[in-house]
Length: 164
Image (spheres, rainbow, N blue to C red):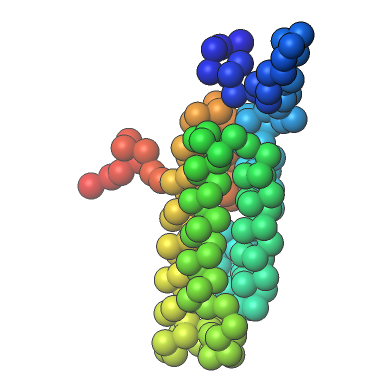
């Protein structure tokens, strides 16, 4: 165990008999990272265009994702890289919700291609997917995890994937 990890677990030192209290980590970061990837792999709004057919379902799903991310963040050391990535994804959810939540015109006209509400919905969802892709790629790399299936559609392209 490294010195910083040891110090971060120290909850208190008591005297006169020099009694020390320790906090034990409840869950390893890699387990949380794995759980986040598994959870997000089931959230079709992140990679399937068919989910745009119901804007209210998109909003409800993003609300649930945001809550899940914050719940997982609460299990982590606030200074950890994983916590920073989860917080960034949660903030991306908040930005999406700020643009589309409780806006009746988006709920009503968000699927009509020629109406401005669809532009707001689709661009906001695309931005959210891009942010999630970057942070998921970072999480997977840091914890040596793989992302497979449809969720990998939102990951950034590798340099060798770019074709002239």
